[in-house]
Length: 336
Ligand code: 13P
Image (cartoon, helix red, strand yellow):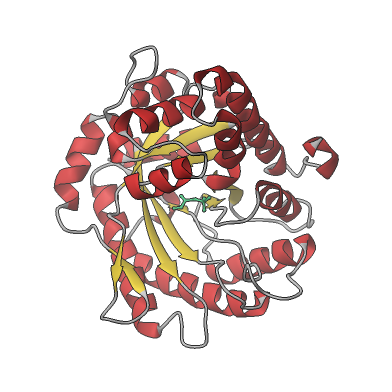
């Protein structure tokens, strides 16, 4: 099992490359398609996946793709199962294994469902060719949140999930997302993220999860979306790295950020700046974006076959710029 996990980490932690999160649930995919006036059906969702997953030379920038269960069994326009499309390009297919959010003890907060029956589902996902998994927990920032109770519950569940996945030879991506929604300051985000990450790593240790065979997918330390005087690129990059250094053990191989509602340009600029701070980083720092990689492509595509080349071009542009950002080689002028 250890060798299998090691090989997956080796294939997924590659300088200049990152992960595409193409694992929107049916509900989220439906929202994304509605934004371009396209009805969400199994077929339109397949077409949407086909745009990204068959983009020419995606493998230059992307080493892993997180899929949603439905996509595992769907085929490209060339009638090849999507996990196989990826495998042929040397990209590791992965799968979202949590089952979304539910109310937490009648409070305003939400925890993540999906531990029940997880082992059986993992067997199926492995048969379909996936080699890693993802589980997302969310935390809102306000006067009373995130609560200690939710922090403890999510940390315990993330650790249980990670342990079970490693037992099945699947590398776990542990995703604690401190949400950007709200008016909170960057320092409030810092405090919440620090508490959350401390609890997550305490739990992973308690469960004996092998950190060197796990990937962390955190949010950046950033001002709330509706905050006044939102922090700039230097402050976001500096405080994010500071927070990670204070909480994430050096044994972890890779940190792959989510974009969480940042604009595509912001997500790229922030990642790039972390690599130009001049600080020695004990882990590889890269991306695992969904919206920041796909939104421009979605807008260019509009659900029309004739727009696929333009959509793929828009997607590959974001993939390439984020690839450059993982090496600190991105510059704003490259947007034009
Ligand atoms: P965003 O990059 O759009 O935040 O999505 C990442 C993700 O996988 C959320 O679970």
